[in-house]
Length: 341
Image 1 (cartoon, one colour):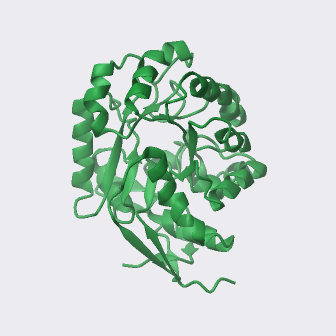
Image 2: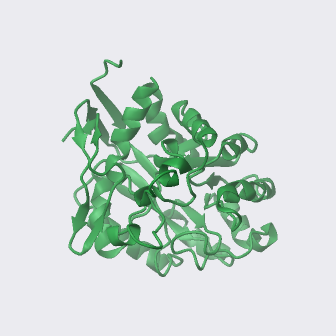
């Protein structure tokens, strides 16, 4: 039994986050900015963030929603095949990376890339490589749902080989194959979510369907979870925490045609501390949730120290703001760690 009663995390970073927009942004933004120093923000709005004007406007709305907190939104552009070198050079200092979505593969990705052929992607990727702009990728095909990430592995390899100077982030990896692939190319890195460290497909659909655990990429097999957890607990230097916390209103989760996404922002640090303590790996948590990202993306976050205490925290059943609401993972359950006020 661990005797640790307090634990501090310096500059916690969430390197894959959905904040949405409007009242949903105003609801979920502070639930991250209160405890994280910064977060890499996804650009899949409607319409997606593809221009400098849209980028700067969205960043300003995020800062207004998170006003009063020490927090930096690290924004991204939605990948387009025809971004010019001049455009990317102009916007470089305002973004931390560019996010590539295969068309229709996840929420609001209908205008994503329809061909993953390297030559089709080359104009933008070549400019990104020269300018040092990282590429973040939702790596799934349109194949059988359990095999989509595995089928995408050759695409990662072709991009990594064709652009060895391009920093590539395999987002929210879910398989043992992806963990293994990280070490095959120097320029391949990855994020992993909280929920993929904890659940398998059995937790989602093995009994009664659990809509608030349904996400894309879908949770995989126990051996995949074990590989992800092992890499995270060891703070593999090419792996970062990225929650992929994806808020959807309760009525869009608890319905026919359930939306994909798990909302973990308000519980992420508490559950990670609980998890790393369970496996006697607390000494690696700061690297997993902050230091690795700083090295991979080569940036210095805002100074912020979060103190966690061994004290029960009852997860709210729902978070609400005006007409928006969202149900968190572990709603109504008790966690063993709390964030000190």
